[in-house]
Length: 483
Ligand SMILES: Cc1cc2nc3c(=O)[nH]c(=O)nc-3n(C[C@H](O)[C@H](O)[C@H](O)COP(=O)(O)OP(=O)(O)OC[C@H]3O[C@@H](n4cnc5c(N)ncnc54)[C@H](O)[C@@H]3O)c2cc1C
Image (cartoon, rainbow, N blue to C red; front, side, top):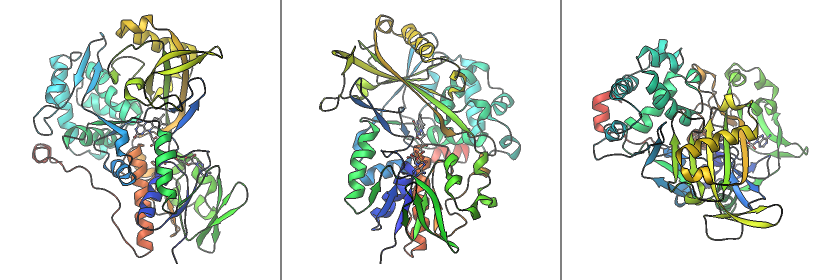
């Protein structure tokens, strides 16, 4: 008889475990507390535009091989655009295209770095030295310090710190440089920039996340026998002797099973685990994990302000601007053509609107700002760069701040992260916060789900390699940096 597998949590970690197991002929029961799947990577309906909008723009990189594999297995890969270039807007408003040249990794981006107009030649030299040093092994002394201390030790100029290290790392890790460990910073640069030509490519979903996970993925899972129960919050993991026997829901119904995955956020998980795990030394680190916020400001303007699909702003409060009208994820419900949407104003009249999303990671310092103050700052910044933005009329706006968007990659954080195999043999933990060797990302979440699935398959006597290998390190990167 096929084992009964129960997964609590329908974020990417739980979904990845469900996909890996369903794909190998073991359908599951997936319990999700909210009315939709996707967890932190999900959409909500905006009645004013009658569109599904993402809580925040989610992007993935070429080095995220597990997330990519997950999408390919279930047929989602065609709903991502691979961006051939990034665009950095310097403090003076100059747009700097950034794309790989013909040289092999790790030199493929040298030309792009060299052309950044807002760094001087001495900044670029300091940066090259810094990158070379970062490619080396991390000493225990460095690992105990925040990355900001490492930058000072390696004589990085204030300009490179503000305009380069901060810009890249705050987007990748959603934390300030004082709250990032050296090994997490190193991972970003090695995987995305140094090890392989394709690591840095940015993939952007071209439809709302709800369409991916609520639509296509749900259909893929359910048509293969997996049961998805939305609005089914797990309230307790039930024990029978030394093994887990079921998951109790808020309604008191118990979903019995043989194998279990608990894929909840770290700040929820302890509340449902059995008492024997509450004090277990392997799980004591969970309650010491800290979080960082990400804010997204959604603006619908009466005119296009830029042609580019996205830009990264340097030395400003706004960090990324995504032109959702160009990327194509804003479509009024019931209309086929992505692009310009209609905004219902004053209850009745419809206006054509161009949709922009501004992302501010590690937005701790914005907590005291009101919606209108923040909107004013962002609109002012856009107007300083694009004349059309100064003339544009704001038709509609939404603000979303996810206060616990990601766990903070503080020095020593990896020692706090438990492995997927819990101390109870038939209970797996999953989530971007478990031990994945990745920061809090969609890749990290998928890796955790794949690792949990591998453990279950092994326990069922059907071992399989679910976790995907990273991109193969380029020979020159191995030779130059020993990567
Ligand atoms: C604003 C924002 C922007 C981000 N941008 C990016 C990005 O650009 N690129 C990137 O790679 N990553 C990004 N991330 C991080 C990424 O979204 C997460 O790392 C990833 O989605 C985490 O997945 P997860 O499954 O581990 O956790 P979650 O997504 O938190 O999933 C946990 C699930 O468990 C459910 N749940 C909670 N309690 C219960 C219960 N009692 N019973 C049942 N279900 C329950 C939740 O509703 C949720 O669906 C961003 C995150 C945020 C918040």
